Length: 348
Image 1 (cartoon, rainbow, N blue to C red):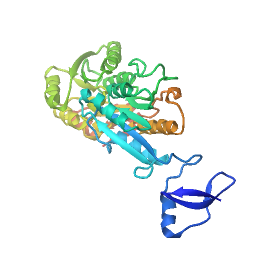
Image 2 (image 1 turned 60 degrees about the vertical axis):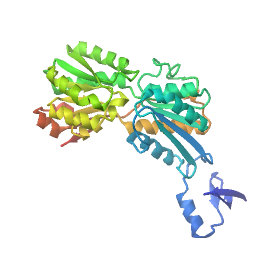
Image 3 (image 1 turned 135 degrees about the vertical axis):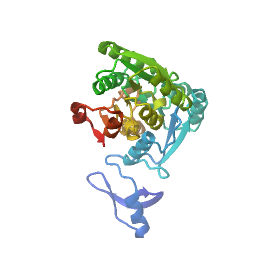
């Protein structure tokens, strides 16, 4: 007989041949309820208590779509808030200058792992704050070019994570836009100059535009305050369509962009499905929940003893094409059947 701990209490138990714990004494209904509610992970038991810090450059909260998927996946893996998981969340609220102080503050709380998201600045701030605490990034476009890791196969240092592939996907989105509007010769591209990875994404889109003989008009957006004027200028300048780069700061602008592009009758393709869901025309990009689930998987492996330096950078495997057919009709556009057939979702 050896004791097992459930919900902070100790009870006698036996160890079966399969290596799983079997209770031999059930002390009333309260204990039974604790057993039913306790997280179970086959093969290993999570640490009694772990601390995960989350640092983001974005103006988002923990219940937002991506972080919520991360927390849900951690729970599936056996880490439950207020039971054996503490999460410390800090947001720079679109002000990169705040990131170094926030990173140092989180490091001072002595987390077991730090998750970084948003622009690459979040990861850089965390790296500058600690060389020992493992860091897992999510949504980085090109972690090798930006110096986050030595290579995708062997990151080195204390950093690993999940890349978004948004540079390569920018070319795919332009291709989609030219399929939807075959006659287009001038496309406005919405970019965020604050994002350090914007040049990489712009370079890929420019190469794709040259191949398709499409002229690009880069339109900078730093915050939501200038969005209305920028889209209005795009329409006045004669651009026939709009491409939204997969820059994290542009994510939260999806609802406003959907309204503005429809108002100005601009066919637009974005990186995020929230855009067509809010009334925009179409989106093509990575499945955000899957990316954050992969990040949670990396965190789990680190908590169980794996070294971040030896965990290869993961890439998303799920990509979503979403088309809003109702918006297409409003804009007077006929979506080619070939696009509708390969769409993951068609909003009617």
